[in-house]
Length: 309
Ligand code: PAF
Image 1: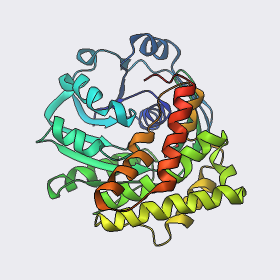
Image 2: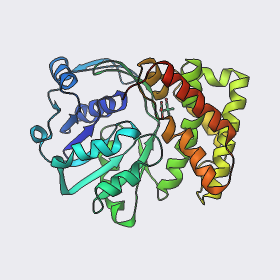
Image 3: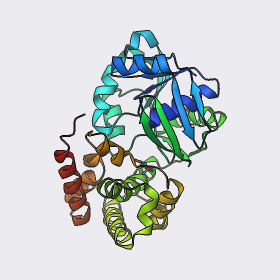
């Protein structure tokens, strides 16, 4: 299966590395030509949980026609870039291309459906953690399950194909019949971990050690759980707060994607995480003051660092 990953950030590079190491033809599509050229020249450099590798990586381009058609398109761009990334990939997509999103946040599936109404769409979450150390250089800092499912009955078969591909590349993967529940479960994890790591500038593993932060995380998650309930979504974990703590431990050494964004002066995904929860809460009549406060704080951090896309 020829796979094209859009977005050579930490997670894009990690999956490109894991699939390539397993022998699968895997490409990266980058919106920046200078970065694509650098990675093509230097290769991918990986350290951490998967071992230390310097992998030649010629299969990266900013030009879709160089890559040609994709059997599987994986989106690993920031949620606010999903629509643009999908547009840039049009030349790669045939009637049979499967589109997979493993991005953080809410709204990506809807954006894919709008751009490609008739394609097989698979969505899910990953508890893999990676930190971008430089261009094409990552630390594999957290190992956890990838959970995927078809967004409708027609894409179940495609989800199974992806599961088999990932498993044979040593990416532990499970399937779910309730993608929405899984996406919301991960949303709540991100709403607890990401803003606080960005505000405090600490890796994930520090959060459970600080009781005041545990209190804020619990409240953010409880608000989210109430909103999920009122929106008719079944959350996948019986104790969502305990799950957050478990993810903090499993990815203890990782700097969350939001912390990495703030440190790099990039715009964050706050409006697709806590900001999205607040908007849902307004629609369903459930207040989310802690999530609203966290949203404002992170937006203030972005303003302070003049964050750019
Ligand atoms: O956004 C992230 O960084 C990740 O989703 C997670 C699971 C919080 C690990 O750092």
